[in-house]
Length: 452
Image 1: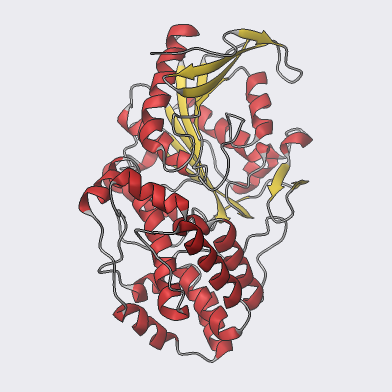
Image 2: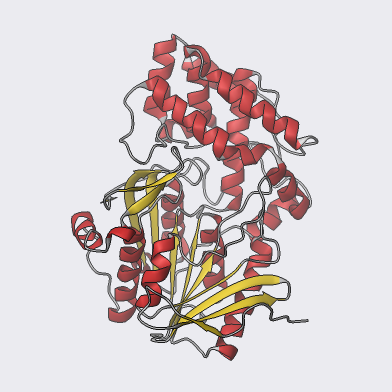
């Protein structure tokens, strides 16, 4: 049964939009949705896919339509229609539901509002995987794809990196964590938090924590308002902060829920060469400095990692995660991605993995990747998000990419209004004013060999 509830076709005034905005809100087959259509609709629909909301926290009330809230009002003012499903399963690894619910909403939009001239699939974090799979599997529906801070190496890559982190903690710091088939997620989470917190207290354990994080490409930088610190202890402190506030999901209820969905354990480290991973890691210099300061033998610890027992996946579960989490790199449409250079949740190395996959099976000419010289997961200004969309729109309109010179992009972004020049500072839990920070960046290889 298809349900339409709450507000359907209610015209509401908007102080920021050029005219009235029609708001559609309700449920489709149990999935809440929100659609905003400005009076001056330009025919373009942006279909937004939200990231993974943790089961450790309540469901969010708000349905996001863009990465940054200020972007929403700007796009409405410019005539864009915005739509998003909250999915039947709001929290957890809900890509399976998302792929159906977003297409159902797109069909509803065409019937109710009218067929869009152009639809752009967009999303952030795990929602970037959703948006990419939507576009890859429905290329006739979508004119373009835009992702922010995406885990584009795929779901297996993301969850395997958590396993690598835990494997190193167990081997080098005697963490005694359950990495798969977790029986007590609350106790396992507490143990992880305690091990990480204790590890930053002395040089020896700090060095081993740096190594564990480097294997998962977790940077020693989290504060978006300051440059990366030069001091080893402070960098490892920030790696630990990434662990405690972001990577903890790999050891608790979200991991348990993933395995329930997949019908088993989809992750593995059997056959993984951790020496090779460290040799290519962006955080390798930090590890080498930390080991030198502690007077430890890095080679000896790598030997321990090599000899430690490994984990193999349940094949059917790994297949589930590939079906609902693996972008293939098909690009029959223009794709624009954007990433901060220091992201400990979805490292920028995801972008390199995705680009390499596009080079294998897609059209590299259809891919444009932007980087922002800032720390944080999805920590963008509205002006950066808007500038990214403008680049994609010019590609769609003209058939060729405009210049992506960082200085020019920053000059364009800074012209936007002050409300679009703020970021959320997770360290201090406030919004702060900043300046656009587009920059050239070459991410390191993703820790695991493609495709996982």
